[in-house]
Image 1 (cartoon, rainbow, N blue to C red):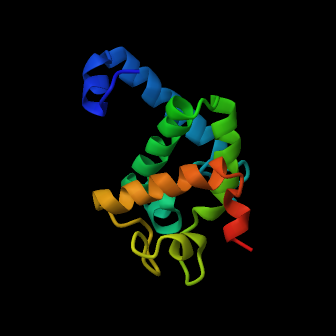
Image 2: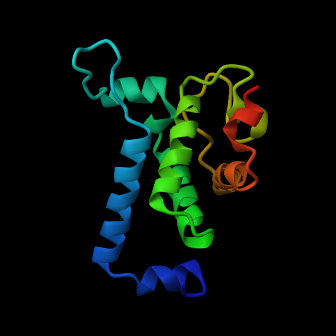
Amino acid sequence: MVGSPKKREESLTEQQVAADTLEFFDDLLASMPVMTTNDEPPMPITPEKLRQTSLLGSATFIRCLASAYHSLIADHGWTRDQVQAYFKELAGHVGAPLKPGNLWLLALPDAFAVNATAPIGRNQQMRSIVDLIVAWDLTNQRIRVLSR
């Protein structure tokens, strides 16, 4: 791996960036499907409804997931299947708006707010979210420890 993120970015071709991005979104959709539950057969949810009911409707939260995904694979040697399995566990905790006692509020009260449908978009808070997502599983504590 190239030293700094800037140098790594400069060393990637557009095709590599596109392929990595598609892998992330494929794995995200496989582990956190966004469908309505009332339709038969289930249909994809509208963007408006997604933004109202899930952190997955937040570009900021998606950026945090993408960074955590990259870290788990590139820095910690996880496979795509391992990240998918972990994201499947995380999927049960992305509902919004966030209510008092929500695990995101408990873990990072400066990055999330009560009744929010997205995290605070400052770089420092986003880095905290990424670090937390990575640390939750790397310490084998997983999400369920915080949601008891």
